[in-house]
Image (cartoon, rainbow, N blue to C red):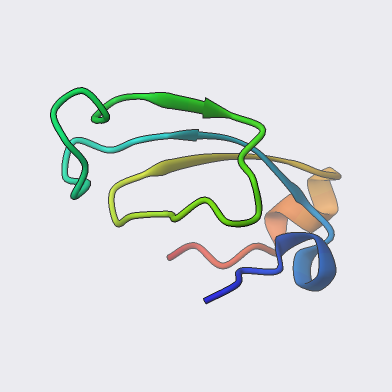
Amino acid sequence: MDLQLRQKHNVNLVLIKRGENSKQTKAEKAKIINVPMPSTVIYQGDILMVAGSDADLAKLPQE
């Protein structure tokens, strides 16, 4: 599933911090991925850092 953050919400995904509940190995947990590639998988519990205008960020879904 492609989130299309830039196209739908006018924001850019700039960083992913892997959550403790991710299905990754122990070494991958809490890993920081700077400038993720479009093919990067996002797991439940990951923390996403996005950049955009205050108005666009306020419109993002909260879940």
